[in-house]
Image (tube, rainbow, N blue to C red; front, side, top):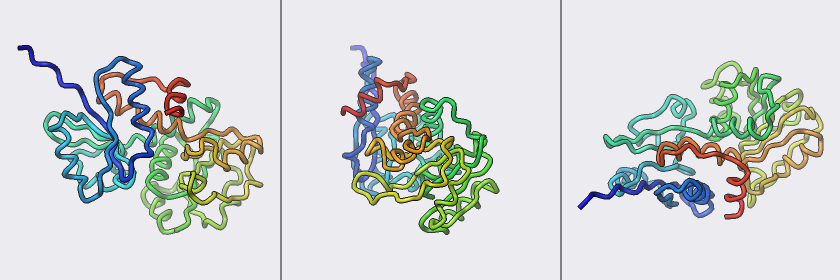
Length: 279
């Protein structure tokens, strides 16, 4: 008998995970390109994470995405960590190598930039300071990406200032920390404004900031994609700003993992967006 090729398996691990749109996204790409494979959501508690990860390759898994609350903990489990994942302090994409080692990367920052490049092609990150709301793992990925594309200054505000101060230590002199109470003043003169907090997300408290000092030439984006257009984006758009929702970041950050796992680089387009939104 001829030995049949194994069907590659991938998935997303979180706790909880039922809300994730990643299965719909990867499932759409697999069908679109006629590729063999499956992408499976897995709810894994923190205490079980390493055992599950070490077992998955034996079951035919070639890699997984990692989401909350595991993105930082994974760095103590992975055997190989990319420089950008180490700098950010979190990983979201794992590759299970044939030698049994777990390779961890972070594609959130590249996904963030690709989303802005696609949906706001005239955006120039070097045109002025960037203001980043929040100092968690997503903020670290965004700041690393903004440094890489040449933002001249990155202003950070977080409800707990020490966490923001830690980012200044890690990312250097371009980072300037402000108090949360001064967020209205911080955004003045910015070319880019990014909300990386969960404020404004469905089921979370509202994000309340005064946008009176926001320049209409500023690009405003929110990594939240439920709702697709947050109150921040609505108010910024009313002021004449270009706004970009957070769904594209989710789509673009998924591209490198899909390519490594299934052997095809997928295209992020309007059909992809609609497939995920309608799931």
